[in-house]
Length: 230
Image (cartoon, rainbow, N blue to C red; front, side):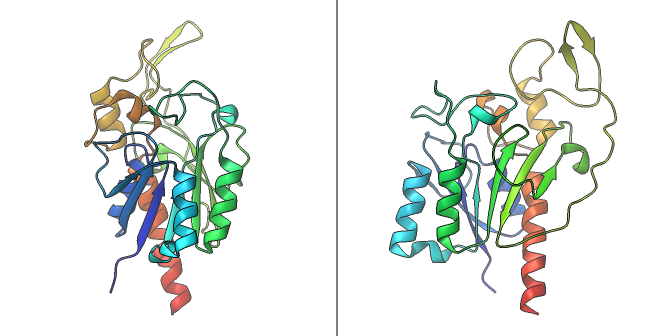
């Protein structure tokens, strides 16, 4: 049986892609910045232009699922940079709506991911590091197109995120995998907390989707697909 294949758009360093691989997918990435540490076949270029080209040529049909993490810093609760030509740009972008338009045109099931904030996506699924026993909280919302899955329970957090906040230093079981100073996590701490070993680039780690999230999503997707086939 041929393995399902996912197109990982705005792929950054490959946190989402690695989770799909753990769930049994073949993975192809696309990002506008140079990502030498991305662990799968990868196209460097504008993700939306690339997706439009795949749709136009019919090559999109080789994929089973499309995952997209478009920039939306204007609506993000924690602005951490943009996907400009060098990867970490200066202006705030909102590519959610044009990404959704193209995802709808593919005719394929899709997953669109955003951090907590005001990004205009459906919150069909929300995941948190505590659901998977991770050392980060890193809440992420997911819009699901052409498929659905039940929402897992969101367990109570076990304590604080370690670091300084409003002049108070707190200790806790989670690290702050963003920014620098004030007790923020070191690169090795971020790698360990999220289960990411193939990149040690600070900026990539601060934006990464923990692979446990997309491993769960990918497994749920293939299970739902098999149930439909049966």
